Length: 211
Image 1 (cartoon, rainbow, N blue to C red):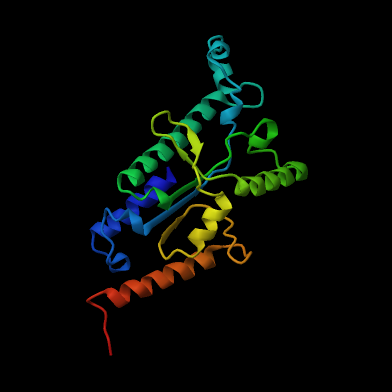
Image 2 (image 1 turned 60 degrees about the vertical axis):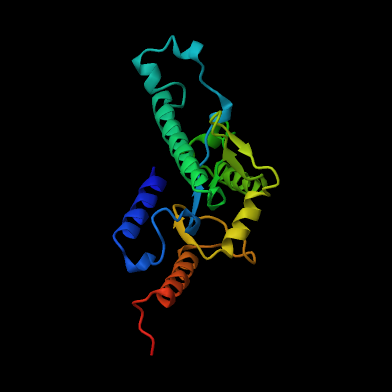
């Protein structure tokens, strides 16, 4: 949901004629670069079934084992709807290459839990993240609603390398690894990129002062 809010705020700024976004047009999504880094989910695990849920009462929906089915359903549905919506918009505007969703949907057990902060589990999450970078880029199939690997699209790591040299607007929602020369990219890196982008816009702006 944060992704849609961020995109809408940027679009509002463009509509209002903000000099920070000159000369970008509202539908110029080719100048946007959206990178969504998910926290992982147990979507593929399929730990719930219709047969199982048919026997649940109110309390079972709220708490089933160590999980909350009701919360899981709403959070997963929200994430899927946002991913689907953004994918449709970027594809309709021929800018699907500018939207990257990095998410691990095959977590199981404690790997998918957000409240297990043991050293063992944290180290395990690091391993999962490193493995995720090596996986192929995936995009949602608009016909079936499931993510599928992009043919000849390379890995997530390859995509982040390419984006590291891209002079586009970054909408950053999480700290991500951009393996440009091996360094870890933080807010300072994004700030520099945006600063360079602003300088470029100022040079092209008819309102800029030239000595």
